[in-house]
Length: 460
Image (cartoon, rainbow, N blue to C red; front, side, top):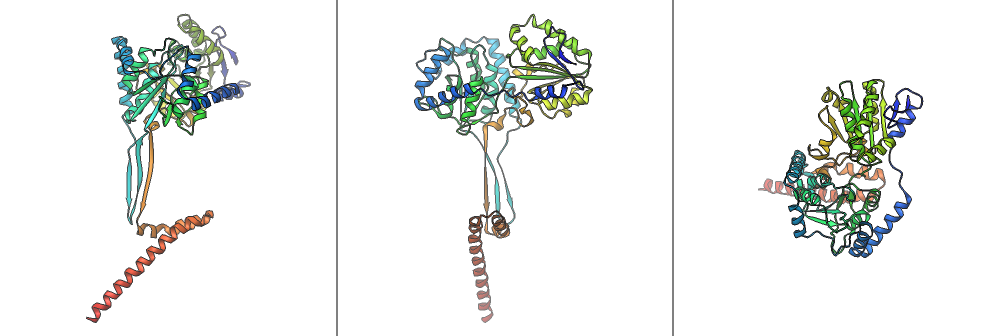
């Protein structure tokens, strides 16, 4: 069976073992978006111009693209305070609670410096320090994303990055939405700049008259933002590339169809390119979930977006059994992986590839999106096979150090020379041999001195 489901042609249904299934599922897994050459051309030009003209170009692009005619890019303290004061008390409390929970989660395990000393005079280890300055990009446009501020900035704040700089597009009147500025305050952001798109990434990467150059840029954004991040990588570090959001729900017979459908819609409503996948070996769930999708769409504020997302990327996969369901889910490597089962905790050990796993019937993806604690900046497009969620490690750098005393170099030096000669780098070997020669001379001199002293004592 491969085709549209009962839900008014809303989703594609793939049945494992049917003709064409492997090809269709493999295409589903290889969902990395093609890179648009026209986007590359535009972004390269913006980056080059911002690098050359600085603030003037960022201001010009902000006026052209966002419709905001700004005199200055940075949000001043008075403006920030005034915006925060406009946030309702209940919203302040919710943002504060989210920031607190995310902070506590990320404080659980912070990598520390370490050292070791070996017999013979070897001393080595790692020194762990925060990056000096990081840039947080927060999308604007039609949406408001205070949760993105919290998820990106809090881990940097936890490891005490000295300066956390945020960039976000302004409204047409030149303001930043109060909830976003409130989130920036509770998350530990130090400075906020009114700029978005590729021009913001360029400004953060290279610096301008008013925007400081950062060491790393993190945060989601549209195709122009993501392409700009790829182009400046090397000048600065970046987080993993953020693609359209995705969810995979693996459901067994204990799952509630309405809840499964709600989890799929919660990600489908993000954007038309979002992916919502159900994998189940329970055949009756297929029609029930499809019916629920259609039913719940009627009351969804972003129904048009969600419907288009489901038509493009909504899929129900019917697996042979539970083992095969997990095999397929791991191949897909989802950003959000929901295990809708009474035995979810036991089944967790079967998950190899996922950004975050949501266990059981009372853990919708939404709790992870906002305040559970784990970060919602997750690997997409199948990159959960090798990338991890954003965390404190992303804002730290390790510097290795090593010291050898003469006895240790004498112990290991000949092996170093042999390995250098094996690779044809005789200069490497010479740098060791010169020191070994001095160590041998010093040893001979000490032995000669001891012999002379012994002879002198014998003569007495």
